[in-house]
Length: 210
Ligand code: SF4
Image (cartoon, rainbow, N blue to C red; front, side, top):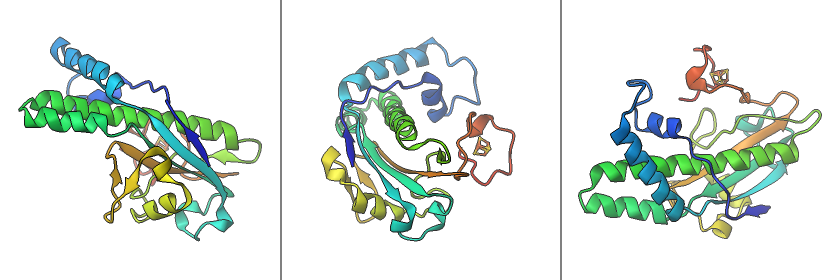
């Protein structure tokens, strides 16, 4: 099991805009919106402490599950940006600063995703190689891996090492946390595609993520 502290994240403005549901409706978000996002990014950098824990496991030593059927090895990971940003969002909401709260929340989600991207790349580099390609990331609650899959992640990884807990309803605390698996094998699923699903023409792809 590997613990990574102080992950340097690179949040992307277009992903934040997509979360705020502006991506498809308006190309130019306008100076006011961009100003809000950039202010929130500055705040988020102070309020976030991105860290994660991950490990690799032989698939035949994990519970038999369709989510892992294409894998010889499985990488599992939990990462978080900590609780401070979501506490600040709650504070802004209480103060009636709803727009700032919503924007900071979206920025926090993208910061968390950015941390997951860093660890995803790192895990691919560590475990991938000849004959052992990496799948795309997949999370409990997505496709054939039901939300209860969170239990496996927390059974085999010590979320407490990065101060992430799991509730009875399978929600992680802090909320700005992400858990995921990566299948490693000769033809792992879901495919690790060079493009984003939102920009892909394969409408019927069973692995499509929006
Ligand atoms: S929809 Fe396209 S980009 Fe997304 S998983 Fe399928 S093939 Fe890959």
